[in-house]
Length: 199
Image (cartoon, rainbow, N blue to C red; front, side):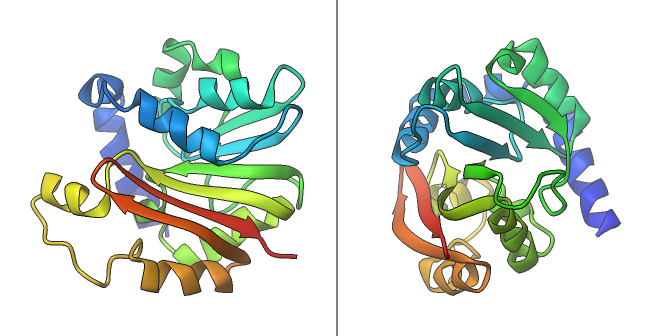
């Protein structure tokens, strides 16, 4: 696992400074995905693998001034970019591993995770850790601003059925991890899987 973490940190550290400028048109897709999460004023939400914190202003707007917004990322350079972009004003930025969160069980209403699932070293246990910190009936959004086919093309790969985000793989993986898949959308302009924390 340490090797996996080192690889992820090296990958994102090298890209942190210009991450937002590489994908300048993603803002509306992030806003729409946050809206789909169904947050209410006063809710507590975690942006897991928050990167430069692009979702955090929308998360803050959804939960209001009395809500709680946490942004957790493994890579310090991404959090530094988030702070430089002023996104620390939307919530608390913390360096933390999504597989071992420094949070109490059932302390959150929702988790937002953009691009996170493809970087989890142990997807089942790691999704179960996200379930641990969410109350029963709470929500999870697994999001990417482009769909699986577009993302594969961007990376010069073919789309295959063994992709973790393919619905036949993702649905049982979530179920084993404490989640019930409630919405699955894989379109050119977005990937969004919403799940509810099982009781």
